[in-house]
Amino acid sequence: MTPLTFYGHSCFSVEIAGKKILFDPFISPNPLAQEVDIDTIEADYILISHGHEDHVADAAEILKRTGAMLISNFEIVTWFGQQGIENAHPLNHGGCVELPFGKVKYVNAVHSSVLPDGTYGGNPGGFVIESAQTNFYFSGDTALTYDMKLLGEFHDLDWAVLCVGDNFTMGYADAAICAEWIGVKQVIGTHFDSFPYIEIDHVAAKATFAEKGVALYLPAVGDILELKTTH
Ligand code: NI
Ligand code: MN
Image (cartoon, rainbow, N blue to C red; front, side, top):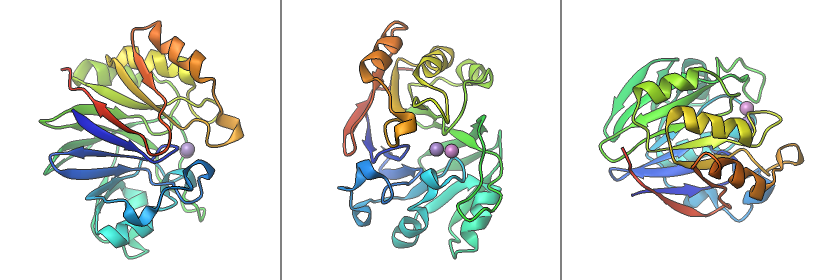
């Protein structure tokens, strides 16, 4: 089992081989995450999918406090480097890095990526993580794209963290198609309910996934899920 802690919007943490891996830290500006004290979040690695404010807002502060290694695209790593973040590894699409807990691959996303001050944030991505403990995919912000079929074909994924909120990303109906293509039966939904544009009907979303035999979890801030390794 792999524990996943949800911090709201697209921010979550996974523990693999004793390492804490935090994704897309956006907590202090999130109206739904006001009870989370970002000073208590532990991280050995912080992975950032793209440059938008709702994915990077608290990253610099947590990186500086924890000394965690930043993994993101070259442009985003360079931007954080200008703010004094030196423990970082840049990737670009299709590239992998081997880390002590497993292998991280930066994969395609159909979206945009500008940093909060207007700096170009490179092209947006998602991540595939492969480890002895578990394999999973985090979509970041993306439309449904046929590229996801490649992930299902060449990776034995156990579960996925997919955006489901519609409007700025794929909605739950497209995310359920993604789940089918990548061959997972457990999906954690992200990028929903944080703002009025992305409020979703939880019952309808879960039913749409259930029709495909996939369990959709729509966690509340602070929820801890235990994900099964199935491959
Ligand atoms: Ni975005
Ligand atoms: Mn977003």
